[in-house]
Length: 395
Image (cartoon, rainbow, N blue to C red; front, side, top):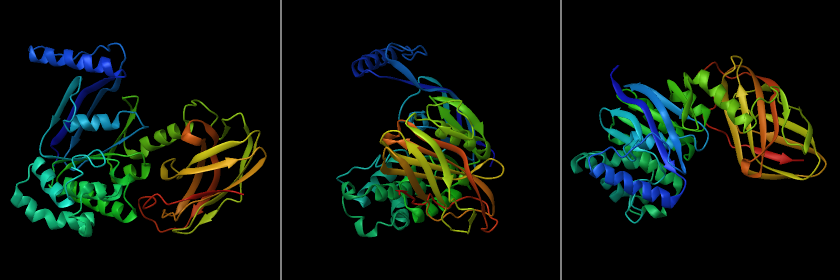
């Protein structure tokens, strides 16, 4: 069970920002390949940039690797190279065994075909015979929970239904290597629980690479974590070591080196403080915070992050609230934040909070250690079983 199934050695990929130049570069590289010359070069040409640069790692059977990083860090590009969808411009990739992948929502599905027909098409592409697909068909449909819609066109499916079907097909082939990109971000809590169980079964025989923006997903299933930043490996190690680095990066936004305990990053905001915060939290209880601050001019917030950090400094759970769009008036503001149920272990925790302007383009408020609380839940590993729906109110 210690054999290496995935090996990446200095893998790099570049893209061009200009469409016309990109097409011209593609023609030149193709002609060079046809002439027997290596058309790739490690030198950047005008308008090119590195999407992935010098990434190296090994993954053995029974191991799960988590890839985290901001949007545009190179996670999906790396996964596409591993799956053979795009060719690296530098380095080498070695894969041993059958590969199952779910990289993009609806990828590999023909929207005009029914779910049943797409199962057969995808299964054939992944190397299954029709007899093998017949044998696994009921299992796939049951896992995807789309019995009523299996003979409807996939274009009529919701995003959640497409993900459930894609995940069911990708895992039903019993791959040696399983590549998953944000599959857990779309499904509901019940589907996430089923995915965790299926990933656990897959790890008995396979190697898994999971891309996610959610620290808890990484913490729950991954043995090793790679934090990508601008295509480079910023940090690599166990999730307990890497997730706090990622959480700090999310909190800092574009502002590096800010003061560690109490930071107001927008010139229009002053005097932020938390009062009336939950001090003791029962198992499955809700965390409540009341945030008070003055605004010198009207501002908007549509994203809020709460990091729940344990005594060892590890991110035990992260609550992300998006699509909220609350307008703060030019006055004294009081904001109440209430999370959904938190299923966390017994212990003492501290909370950091960050509020972002509409579009997430600018940090309004950042409090690194805004409050502390004690949880009296059972002693168990893991954090929240899902990211709870949360709300933010302007009082």
